[in-house]
Image 1 (cartoon, rainbow, N blue to C red):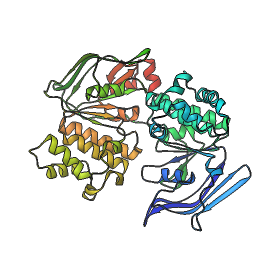
Image 2: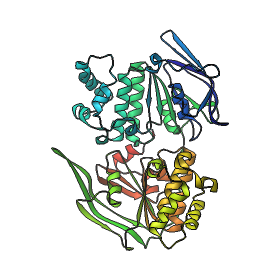
Image 3: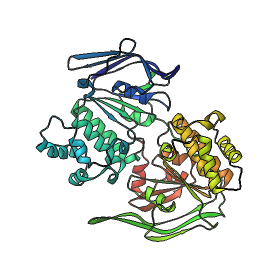
Length: 482
């Protein structure tokens, strides 16, 4: 399928959310759409797929060509909706596959549902074949599993299998590997290359990750500059984190273990994990999906209980706050920014002036006053994450756990959030555990890095040393470029 955009734009009232863009997506190519947050890359992909946001005012033209068929939408004339015959040829893959899958339906039947041209008595067998095609092992278990029982990488493969079941000709992928660890990311990229040729797909791949674009795309279009870019490899410089208080330990963990049991088998999520975290220190934790990173964070934040081991807080009462990957899900959508921060202050510091304290915190995090009275949905991803950090700081913590805090953010916003995290650790002497699969983040701001594999620490070293001289073969493979 070939797509031609002519001055395509979307505005809300008088403000452009997508500035006019003219672009051809050639049949059979992977076109990389590189863009920071807020430039309209998701709007562009949705518009091509026939989804116009409520309140959005589109303009310009989109032309579709495949199998000697042509169709044009001219938004400046009388609007014609995208015919179902073309819409059925388009599949979308989103950043968070869990939100795109039905949580109450087994994964296999979600794929089978897309096999509309296959007799019902043959759909399960064909679904098993599709699971094998997207390189999922133990296909019978995967077929019967619910989305929450699978890792992020497995969930994303289910979405790809649904796209194959539709026999789509155009695949629109919006940040589909951003939340995946480097090894799974490389596997998904390789899978995309293979199925593109097998299924004769045209692919529009939107991301803010230049490394992924260099590895995957045939051409790269920069949506913020409206021009094509050359494919070049980026150099990631080593960071220079602030010093920390080596005499003051805020968290001591000794021999932590956790096992989950599911019917006839047990999963060792954590095994004999020990570490010390000092005031002002940032420790990075890297590992694949299923390595135990999230379980570790849940145990520390008391969402799970360990089977064995000790968690010691030498400075007294445990004052831990957690910041999640998707700030939108951790913010109350019905409460404005200032009010949400004031609520936390009133609960944790009842004697403080909540308005004054909240205003100070928001100013510290560079949130401008006009944003104080907006709702989370009216903010960018970076602004939402700053609000989430403000709420965490409002509880006056000694320890912050950051679980993939920048996975959904573009490169520029990520750098700003990381600089903010460094400043907070140093100025407020907060110990930080920074969980990420993005080794660029870990390398730029952490003092020490821990590599987790199957619930065990296999390597623990000063960050600069670990990246310069990794010892374990798994570490070398994990931190290798995409």
